[in-house]
Image (cartoon, rainbow, N blue to C red; front, side, top):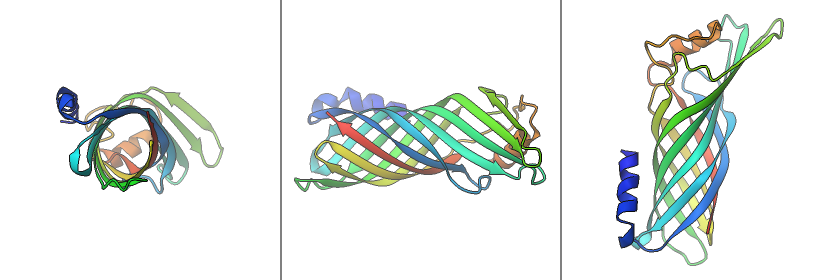
Length: 211
């Protein structure tokens, strides 16, 4: 649906007012619902284009790399810790509304998104022996497609935007039938807790510069 909206947006761009290209980046504070005990810091960066519409509306699609992280403690009899990092190529479409107050523009933001995981990095640490094991790009049992929506507030001053969003991710992090190819039992415990619609969610703080 998001991709279709992007196609339609670019297809009717000749009816829109002038727009602006831009670059964006920021911090992400993510966790897995009912699995993570807190939020872990990640990051995102990419490019964007803002279409200005009448009556204070704007549409701003973006293409970005988004690193989402989570830490899971005590997943195996209180002995192990798992650090998860998954990088997504993500396509959000920001629907904005806010009054132009000449010097600045506050706005409401609704941003549906889709994404595809392109890399991952997992690290386990055994609490008693401090033994650390790492593995990368192991996709056994994981769902690489994600989709969701963000809701937030933004402020635009001249060519600079700052947006704070809370993001809900509706796609499952693990396939219900896929096998975890890693030998780490901790991953199977996380999968058992995260198959029913649980995925990375949390807050993003994004700054964009428009040209």
